[in-house]
Image 1 (spheres, rainbow, N blue to C red):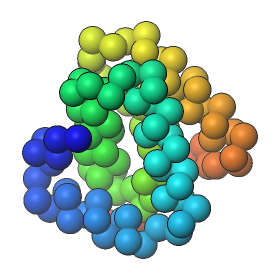
Image 2: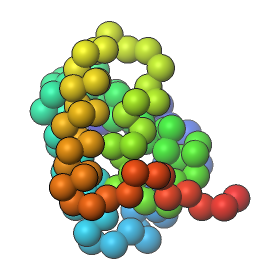
Image 3: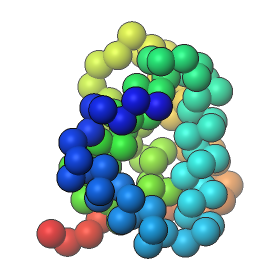
Image 4: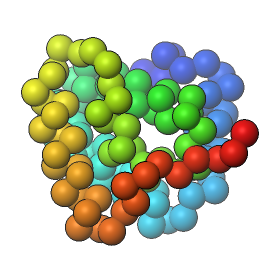
Length: 109
């Protein structure tokens, strides 16, 4: 995954968020990314979409990467249109099955 899209401050924010997450939230994040990449493909474009979502999460002040699935619909444009929608539906099912929040967790800045 090419994190060059993110500036150093955003990368540092992601590391801090990761360190403060519970093991359960870390597993949920990993599972959601894996589900998304199974639909989008693990080639460069699929990975770039994951990085774009991480960027949106940092900008929004997320306090847990387990909110990953909530940000998929916020991607403005990409050539994977239907695949993004399909991943969103699959991950929404995952989030419901695992009783994850339907609202992003945010830090008050």
